[in-house]
Length: 223
Image (cartoon, rainbow, N blue to C red; front, side):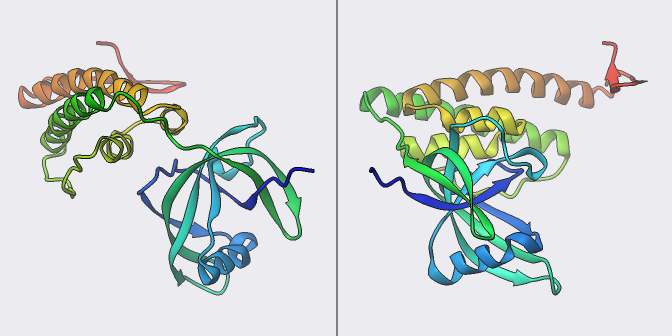
């Protein structure tokens, strides 16, 4: 029988990308396994789970997350920093002792056409700088920025982390098999987001934002 690797399962309401640091509060039920992973320097299988619920659909993408820091908030709750390692494919989850574990498989990103990757990553970097500048303009204060990386893979993951998107879209980005496709997708997302942000920025400058109307689904603009 083929041995299938397993890691402790950690549902997260934030999509964890390789290289990303996520700070989370760990509920009492998960505290022992997180502390164990911290002591042993072993990873968790971090999977996007809205509101912390275990997903019903498998398989799905995840990330091996390494606990690098822990802080006790009170007798029950633990605050920890988790850094994203390699991408993994999670085949399913099963109960194992007091904590669920995930069946995992390696899921490295495909990297081909290296010349094209450099051009695409340069395009993503350029658009991302424009996107971040527009966000700063709209918020009226500077963002806390890191220097943008230059290697195509690092650029792709940096952009996926930085762009403000719903969790399900971020999970979609994490699951894209190849680097070329991921960069292409980010270019299209940034093209769309930059147009929207530029419009909001211009309306703010002219003090011409449309009035919001309350509806059963929340506040919406009629313009």
